Image (cartoon, rainbow, N blue to C red; front, side, top):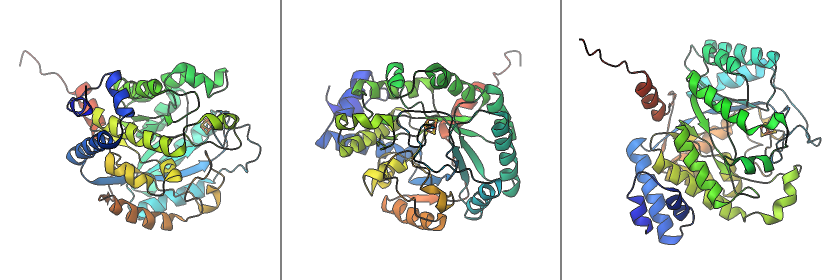
Amino acid sequence: MIIKQILENDTFLREDILRLLNCRDEDRTLLFNKSAGIKEKIIGKKVWFRGLIEFSNVCSKDCLYCGIRKGNKNLKRFNLSDEEILSAAKFAYDNRYGSIALQSGEIESTAVADRIENLIFKIKELSRGELGITLSVGEHSHEVYQKWFDAGAHRYLLRIEATNESLYRKIHPGNKKHDFKRRLECLKSLQDIGYQTGTGVMIGLPFQTMDDLASDLLFMKEFNIDMCGMGPYIEHADTPLIHYAADLLPLNERFDLTLKMIAIIRIMMKDINIVASTALQAIDPLGREKAIKIGANIIMPNITPGRYRDSYKLYDNKPCTDESAEDCRSCLEARVSLADSEIVYGEWGDSQHYDKRRKSIYIPKSDPNE
Ligand code: SF4
């Protein structure tokens, strides 16, 4: 089947996705035009902010690709004070960002669970309930997720990173702390509790095949996610996976594949929220704009106090680590308008998919006796 015919369908088979991932030249343009058209029709030319607060780079895990893994001793660890976190949240509120995202390394403990709950309460209080809160703090128990949801967090991003279990095992240590099934259970808990649930993968990992990427997209559709955050894999010198750097696709191909993944998921799941990840900009200065043009609708401006940003490098050459939150905002305004889109201030920008999913679950059935 030619690409044009594939793109006439709403649902893709594995072989369709493989054809789309491999398409080039005019076929690639057809793919991007289709995804851009769907975004404009369903979402509009709009982009919402999630002010990103990377509040701690302390992590108990050792993911083999990650620059802030526990085993990296060449890193200065930090943990922002509550006051610093609240002041960053206040900046987001004062600048009408609509939402913030709290992100950190993964530590499972009662003290961390209580601290995050308390921060959620305080952020809600300082913003009169107006700031939306996304959490991205890793795997925790159902009870802890519930407690944070009850406190007011309503979105959670837990990237699966690779949906093929054997690939997952190659990029994580083989122990209970890095268990694929637990990660899936956590995603299920989040969805069951009622979070807008997001996941995503890295693109261009060592050992990864095109078939793995097709499986990733089919997984996201099957799991019925509300939000997607995908980015190119960029190697970090202080990680075990650096030994496979010679086997990687060139950066420009990883970049191109990421755009295709974004375009395909936009066509497959028309109304979800899709992040234009910062990692795209690490490869191409216009990376995020390109992602917005072909399907992404969320940007996460970094509002972590500047002096800490250099120590939150999940990968090498992370951009914008030397900017203040103010610089970041003006730069992004210019970038978003370059992508022929506009930032929506003062709104949560929730996933339309989530609203429809919840309504389809909870709309009370009419009483046949009435
Ligand atoms: S990917 Fe997340 S959990 Fe894994 S080492 Fe990095 S911060 Fe920790």
